[in-house]
Each structure stands twice: as C-alpha cells, then as structure tokens.
Amino acid sequence: MKTLGREACFKRWVPIGLLFLCAPLLVQTAPGHGSDWPEFRGPTGQGIADAADPPIHWSPTRNIVWKRSIPGEGWSSPILYQGSLYLTTALTNEQDHPVSLRLIRVDAATGEVIWDREIFARTGPSPRQGKNSHASATPIARDGHIYAHFGHMGTACVDLAGDLVWTQTELDYAPVHGNGGSPILVDDKLIFSCDGTEDPFLVGLDKETGAVAWRTARHKTDAWSISFSTPLLIQEGGEKVVVSPGSGHVAAYNPVDGGEIWRVLYGKGYSVVPRPVYAQGHVFIGTGFMSPSVLAVRMGGRGDVTDSHLTWKTKSYAPRTPSMLCHGKELYYIADNSYMTCVDALTGKEHWQQRLGGTFSASPVLAGDRLYVVSEKGVTSVIAAGTTYTLLAKNDLAEKSFASPAVSGKALFIRTEHHLHRIEAQGG
Image 1 (spheres, rainbow, N blue to C red):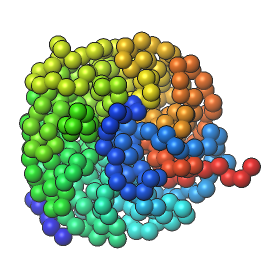
Image 2 (image 1 turned 90 degrees about the vertical axis):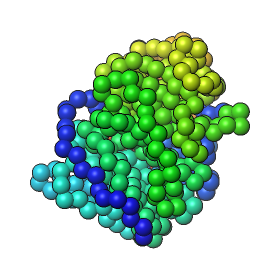
Image 3 (image 1 turned 120 degrees about the vertical axis):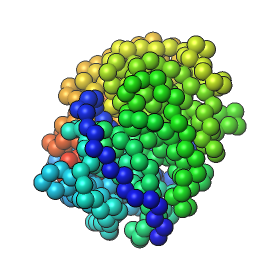
C-alpha cells in the first residue's frame, strides 16, 4: 500500500446551507457488467437505467428480498459492481467525532456482508452540517478496484478483497459542512472537487498511485466558496470534458491536465450540490443553496461563455440538493421542499409541476419508463415518465433516507438510516 501525506483536519464551522449529498448524447459509461451501477447515479452518472424493471409497489413487508443492518452513519449511495454492493459508513464517538471511516462490501444476492474494512482512523473533530454525515460521498468501481472518498478526510483505493492499494490524505481544505461530492473516473484520473472556504480547486489523482496529477484553481466569484457537487464527464465532438459546478460558476475542464475550457457565471450562488446532467447538446445545472436556479448551458465555446451559451434559466422550484434527470426531451427535477417539475429540456417550457409531499435530498432515478423519487422519510413516489403527471404508487419504508437508489434489472437498492434494502417483486 502506498500512503501519501497526512490526514487533513480543519476547525472552522459555519451552520449555513444544506449539503449532500438526460438521457445523454454520449457520456462516460464505465466498463463492466451490463447490470452494474458502479458510481453515483449509475453507469452514465445521470440516474438512467433504461432496461431495468423494478417493482412499482413495496412496503416493509412486501417485495423486500432482504434488509441488511448497516453499522455507523453514512449517506453515501450504494453502488453495484460484479454482484456486490459497496457503501461507506462512519463510526463516531460521543462528541460526534468520526473515529473509523469504513467501506463495506455486501453480497447483492443474499445481503450478507462479505467484508467491512476501516479505511481511515480519525482522532480529532471534523465539523459537519447537521443533515450531513461523515460518509456522504459515494464510492466508484472500475477494473477490479473500489475508490472510497471521504472528502477532506482522505481518499483511498482498495482491491475487491478489501485490501488497501493506496491512500491520499494530503489535500488540505476546509469544507465547513463536511464531505459531499463524489469522485469520477476519466481514463487514468480520479477527479473530484475540493471547494472549501479558501482557494477552492478541482483535482485529478493518478488512479494507480493516488498521486496528484493536476490541481486547478477555481474561478472564485463569491465570498463563500464552499460547494459539494459531483463532476460529470461529457464527450461531444470527439472531445472529453469534465463539467463541474462550483460557487458562482460552472466550468468545463480538460481531464488530461485540468485546464479550464469554458465557464458560465451565475453570481453569488454557493453550497452547490446537484450533479449536472447532459442531453440535447446542453448541460443542466443547479446553481446553489441561497437562491437556487436551473440553467441550460449549450456545450462548446471557449473562455467565458455566460452571454453566448446560456439557453434558458428558471428559479421555479429549483433543487438545492437533488440532482436532475433528463429522459428524451424532458428534464425532471425535485425541489428539496417537495415540488417536482417536468420541463422541455430545450426551451424550459413547463409541462407539469406537482407537490409530492415531504422533503427531498436523494436524486431521482429512471428505470424503464418510470421515475423513482425517494423522500427524506423513506417514501418513494413512482411516477410515469412523460409530459403528463401520473403517480403510479407511493411506497413507505418507514425509515429516514437521504441516499440515492441503485438500480439493476428487476432490483432496486435503497439505503435508509440504518439499513440497506433489496427491493424486487416476489412471486405473484
């Protein structure tokens, strides 16, 4: 195992904002099993499982194949890779200090824990926003390795036996509300944002060693620079670009060297959480916590393209936390306060807007022709995809949930506060 640096620790805490944590023309699809869900929001990173067919109805006693207790606390979403589920968790002491940051492997068929490994041991405080956890970033799997990310507390690579390959703990920054954004893999780089209180940056690590390959300073436009979004890889016109929203702006970067390609400014937005989605030649962005908007940005261009590439913008029930979803020509998004909206992706024209009830942090997924939207109380609304609102079912697991679901074939995997569930139709 190779170890780089020392664990970063910060002491600032400001209780502001929430944290967490499309059908593409062409976005990155991780190689592997066709039924894998290997990163946050699945193979394309956009919550799409076109060929899946999970059940419409379930309850704590219906269509639950297994329910596995998960120790500690964490809001990372489960991923599925080669028949196993992986998720992170944190064990804490009485002062809510993380003492053990862990990665767990669960057999997807049986729900049995295959291994539970400590990745980092902590001894000091690590402040977080009350709604967040110390293990909110979702792991990512590729080529027989799992990459576990705990934000400012460190990043690691393990093999499928759970043995550490490398750790990286030299990236010292203060995120204020804890960790949130998840990493992505682009060729030989593991890329994630480090948008702390000062000198925010995007970083690319060598995926084989964990060494810093490049580090790019953000274009800071707001006194508050903290943000927590997960980047998205987009390939258009033969060019790979990584789109990463930050405080006050969204930018596209060259994944090879981290060079900024273009940017769009959106003022004083900060604490940006939603992951971008891409369709119809546009990338769709949620802009921040205090005054959230949805932006449709046309791909292409160089430098500051704020005036030339912003196609439409709306503030109508824009999400602060959940990522959006695009399928066909329709863009869907759920506001934290329960209003779900469907608009035309190219024009922003509203098709429908409906209050689902409850509050929301998890990002919606699409399976087949249905949307699955999980509330913070663990109630999943199943909605028919399309320009007319049709609610098919509401299913209550009776346990808090902030994590986004994983989908594979006829199965839906949902993490709640204390459990991981496999949901699948059982007989007649």
